[in-house]
Length: 94
Image 1: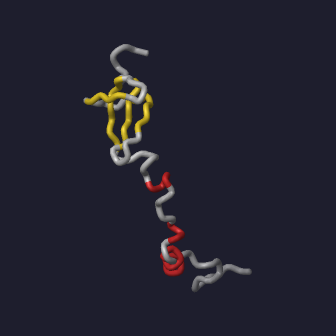
Image 2: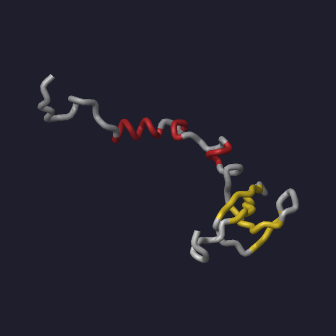
Image 3: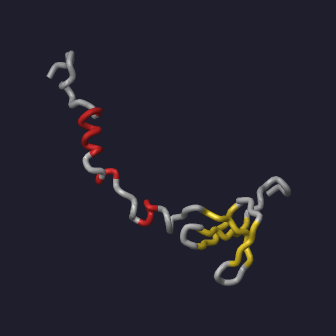
């Protein structure tokens, strides 16, 4: 690799602010703070609003699109594609 043209790729401590979950991974993200890992290492710190530990999709608390009280079915009835041969002016031979 050429010197001086690549970003600094190093281990970074990511912290989920909503629940305190911490994980370490390698990243090029720019940080101004440092934080301590559970094993005592001092690493650059990046704060997250959400992670896989707190996001509703990954925790299973997000409502499914199919469980929205029939709104999806109502949409398809109103805007859904008509079955073949049902449209007016259809000249296709059977």
